[in-house]
Length: 85
Image 1 (spheres, rainbow, N blue to C red):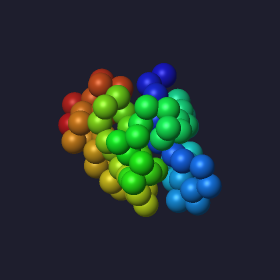
Image 2: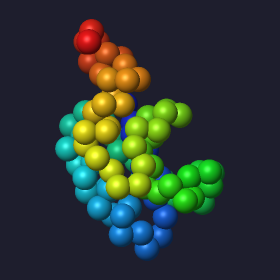
Image 3: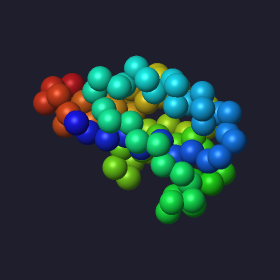
Image 4: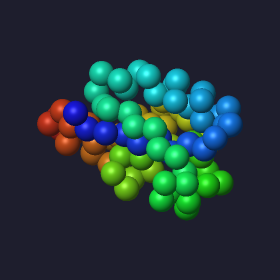
């Protein structure tokens, strides 16, 4: 199953809400929570950040619409489901 990473930091209410908002993807992706201090310091002022590989799907106040839009933009559904758009 493909993996989405969500970059978070400690005591971040926005990160907690963002993690909950990604639950709709649990059946399609493994969602891995990573701390910003584990090599993701570039995202320190942008957390939470949702990553697929090196592609940023959304950041800050996470939006399901923006995430889906970026799935299409980066052909993630095509890669994952072998569907042409």
